[in-house]
Image (cartoon, rainbow, N blue to C red; front, side, top):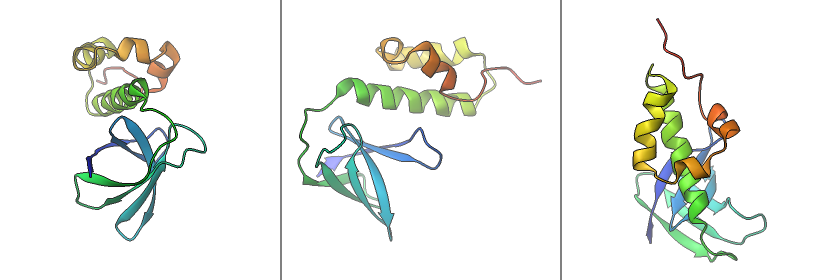
Length: 125
């Protein structure tokens, strides 16, 4: 069994599961999530996650090594999205602490991705 981090995916109502530097997406069925690899098309890597658990159970091995950059990118994008949606701070005030927590963030995201990562970074009056 492997510890799992659950993050919001890039698509609406999407959820990604990060475990051992592998990224999974899910198909839900009655509180049990059948997970499949979300990094490489055709990878046989699968796992199962149950509501309330803090781990996943791996069913089939992946056909590729873990992608640490993809894990960092997913976690950074999620943190950026959460922070952007929960504050009225300017972009620099949001991004600076994120780069402190995710030092590889600047090399992971392009400017286009940073602009698409969340709602407009403007203070509201």
